[in-house]
Length: 410
Image (cartoon, rainbow, N blue to C red; front, side, top):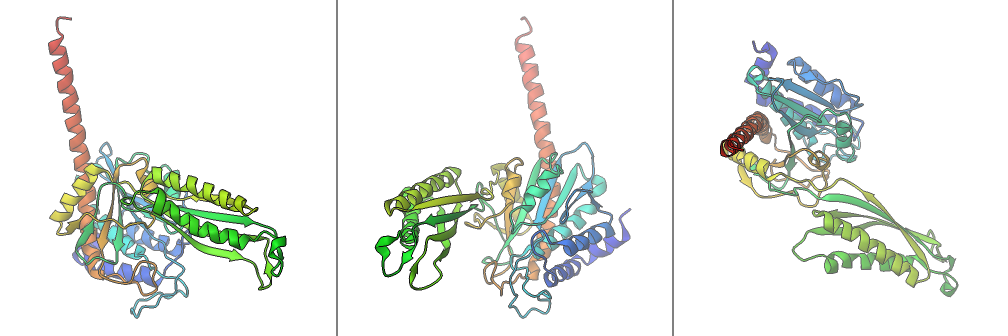
């Protein structure tokens, strides 16, 4: 018999989810500090008797709805953290926390996937497998997915799906494509060492600012001259430090930046060429330079079969499905896809300022249909996996039978 509280929520699900979304938006928490957010999600799940798994996580959680314990397992992932941004909207439910804001839509993701869990719960008695709902911490710090994976809770998962909103697509648009939906994200540091001197006598020193300046301009040739024009890649120097006064040539300079790629071979090429350029330029001026490379999350990698399945279901759910991606933003959902097939899916939430902008907004009309879609996707994926396995078993049995028949005289 369906939980009476769940029945009441389902009857007025749109208002319920908008209320959750607004509460999350008002109370943003930074990566790996989502203590109150985690408490709220647990409370809302337990209210309708959805099992929250006991895992060694400080923040974030994984819940599950189990039907047939011998059936397949599907996971749905959302992220729950916010950003260190001062909100500049006029929303009645704008952030109450100074300097913190849900400026990337993770509050939307959380509300929508909570709604999906509510909808799946209705059918628990007839569920042919298990669905796990990941409410992941620390996406913005790119370490939350690793923490979830480290618990082993996804070791039995057959397929995984993730959601992200986009602020340059109308409500009703769904984006998906095979392969990379987001980029591999790497950070680099460059430490340049020269010889300090009086600014009036530069010949007595080795100017690290000159070295750094040449490095900045030369690094741009990697993308423009070493990578094909039809490939996507980006290298940006975003931080420069050197010196502290006007009449002294400093001893050192510091650079920092990011590299974004969709292809692992290109990712490796940029790292190699950057090291060669940095070392060569520094030596040509008589100085030295050290490249420190910080590998981040890889590119997401949507599996063709699950893209096809998710696309068909999206159209049946009323979405206008387009073959689009998020571009060169990073997303640690990619860590799940290294070992689990699945798809990362983007949902239009209305035209707004870009992600991470202080005036960024989400159209609440996008929440309910997103919940319905991911509930259908999770349940449908279980059946798809079961049917596929049954077909494989049947084909294997048929092949065995044919082999025995054709070799009965051996």
